[in-house]
Length: 255
Image (cartoon, rainbow, N blue to C red; front, side, top):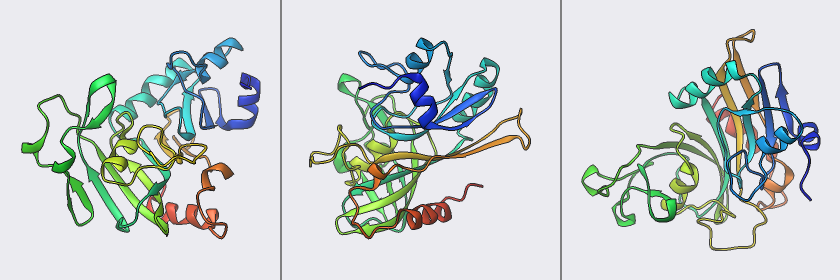
């Protein structure tokens, strides 16, 4: 049953002040703008609360999402995402072995048929040089493309699965999901790219976010939203979520 706004606010609030509201969004609810679907902005509006999304995460992704409650705060915050100065860290459980301890995916994105985001190059043109995936400019498709960079650290390996900390340096739509799928390490449960089935949700989580916030003392927001138990279910029983989060913090310090 769909929760109402008072339930969402009570259960999911990570931080709130007179300017912003940060929620630990469950997987399966949209932030805003999804057709034929109730979203956070609509839920709040029905209860008399106006929200201005600072950024979005996908419906299938859980975790930290920042919304302005004061329109004056919205512009300065969204500009940090546009200028790529907001520091974002995600967690993911992915298919496949062979990932390096750290890596970089520098593959431009484009929009294909049915508005689907894809790599702006044929799959066979994707190259790997050590810990870096890229495509030569000469191999890019003759369409508008968007330079995109994802940095990652492999936190643990469990057979043919791995837990990653991810930093999307650019913030393109579906960037993490597309980058990981196209290098052969799709996120478990991703409805767009994981054909194996058997997962109740997509195992991608928005974990940490740091931005400048001039109205605060000190003038910054450093937010974190821990994954729920459902995020860790693909891992063995002896996996230690606390140790994995500590490793993620070392890989991408909240500087």
